[in-house]
Image (cartoon, rainbow, N blue to C red; front, side):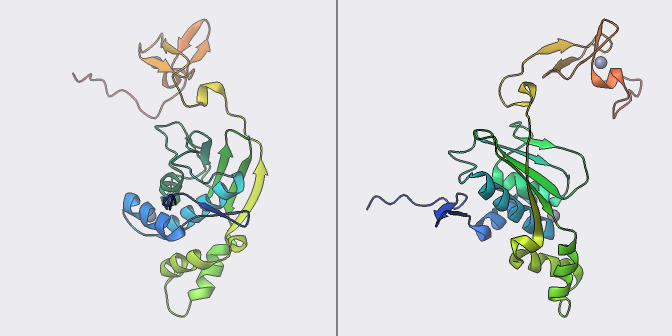
Amino acid sequence: MNEIPLRRAEAIRKEGYAVFDFRYLLEESLSSHGHLCPGQVLGVRMSIRGLSEIGILDPKGRDRKSIMVFVEMDRCATDAVQSVTGCSLGHRTMKFMDYGKMAATFLNLKTGRAIRVIAREESRQKAKEYFSETKGTYEAQLEAYKTMHDDELFDVMEVHVKVKPEDMPGRPLRRIRCDTCGEHVQDMREVHRDGKVLCRPCASAGYYRPAGRDIF
Ligand SMILES: [Zn+2]
Ligand SMILES: [Zn+2]
């Protein structure tokens, strides 16, 4: 028999549908996130839906160069998206869009197909109703999100996403020195103003402010 064993992070195609191993992916996700929570369940399911829609069956294997994901929240679910898709900031395949929304867009870089999956606000209430007799809100959501139908959990929309060359994985397109602080900026994140090249924090307020001491 030449049967290739299925790596469970990978989906199988069944009657035209991608079938992922939800339980395995959830286990894998919680071991990297550190705890089981409603966000893990939601993030895993969101990823499964997104990947299926864009035709990515083996995100961490043969399809790893074909995928990019845009997450709109820095919450528990984000870790689950990273775990299932294998996309990360370090690989430049995960983009963090600071919108505070429980949503993510899954982009197939080869076909250009992009699907945005949004967790429905109503699902929070529905989850409580399903398990209201026996559990608190947190436990109710945890259990309900495992079993609720996709249509109850998510709204799904097809979108267009244009990725700039300087945002793609691969070698940096440019490295340039800031005229004010002298630090180097790559990937064309510099600002040109009045003939000067500035890094973003020098051009406008950054998240940090020098405390007045350099420590060597
Ligand atoms: Zn969590
Ligand atoms: Zn600077």
